[in-house]
Image (cartoon, rainbow, N blue to C red; front, side, top):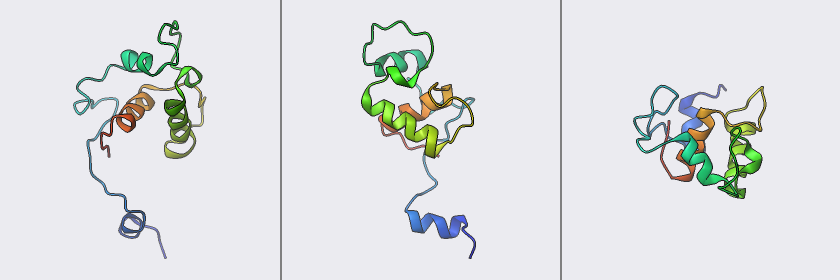
Length: 100
């Protein structure tokens, strides 16, 4: 038996629906600003931002960022630093925006 979309979709209950969000396509995220969003997730919003590091985030955002880095979109590079795509996905998860 081969695991295909026909088999996988009913089994997991996942659906291919929602906004297509990527680095080039942010039309679904009209009010998204990566710097403002990152600062809003910090444990201490007065911290000087030198990079988008996971360790400075609040607990919920930090846990989701690690799940994204290790399971949803596995990286071969540094999992502690958030990319722009990571921030967009984190924003979508935290604000309940469906993405494809």
